[in-house]
Amino acid sequence: MSVSPEAACETRASRECMRERPLSPHLSIYRFRYTLTTSIVNRITGVSLSLGFVLLVYWLVAIADGERAYEYAYRGFAHVAGQMALALLLVAFVYHTLAGIRHLIWDLGHGLEREQAQRSAWLLGAATLVISGWLIYRLFISAGGAA
Image 1 (cartoon, rainbow, N blue to C red):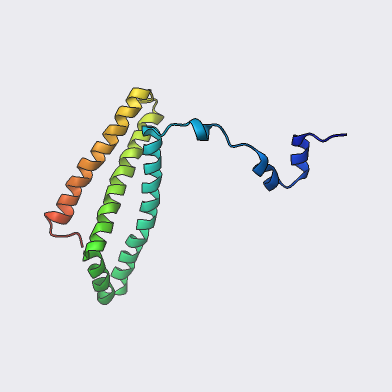
Image 2: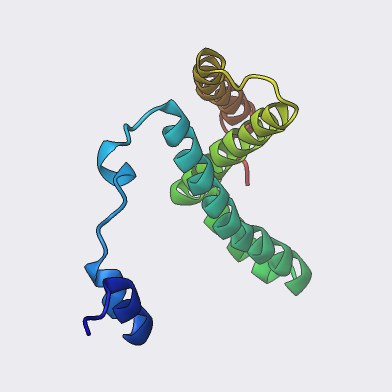
């Protein structure tokens, strides 16, 4: 009596069966489009904001730890690398916030058509650049530095 492949998978370790299965066809036919790009960038900005939260905690601990610790943190944030990190976190925050608003609009059932989604993707990118550029100018350039 022969055993079907499905029955064999039930008896063998699931890891072995997973190796024998073909990949889903969507991996080979899916095109890299604006919706995929905005989704990936939204996830990347979310992760970067989570990592940037460590900087916020460091700054708050430095404030609570006294003048010497705060001065050390201040010098780190005032350094060019610190300023760049803060500026990139600001861009990530603006993008992630605007993408969240876009998703809230989608949840209301608006902007789901292909043309509307593409237009909102371009608007998301443009608004991120304009708002981030304005904030970076106001906070870092015209104010003489953020820290």
